Length: 108
Image (cartoon, rainbow, N blue to C red; front, top):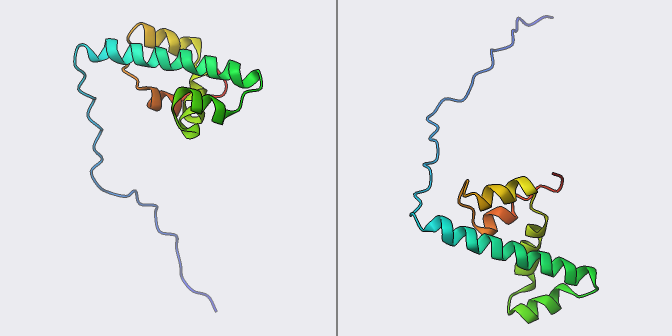
């Protein structure tokens, strides 16, 4: 017995894809955001130094009045690449510390 069959062509899903609108940034947001992110990076580097010296995340969190989760989240900022640092300093894109913490690549 044979059944006549042919493969259907692949169809692309149809619909409207909207590009996200660029964020509306106030003129002084850049300077405030830059200062906040650079401060967070400096703190993260200090935390990494403390961790390398044998401190616990919970000790650092207690000193800073933050949760251990907050410390773990922002510690990755200590490893921001030099290229990204220059982009932050030169005012390329407005980053927040939490957005940047999720984007720090492990290898640069």
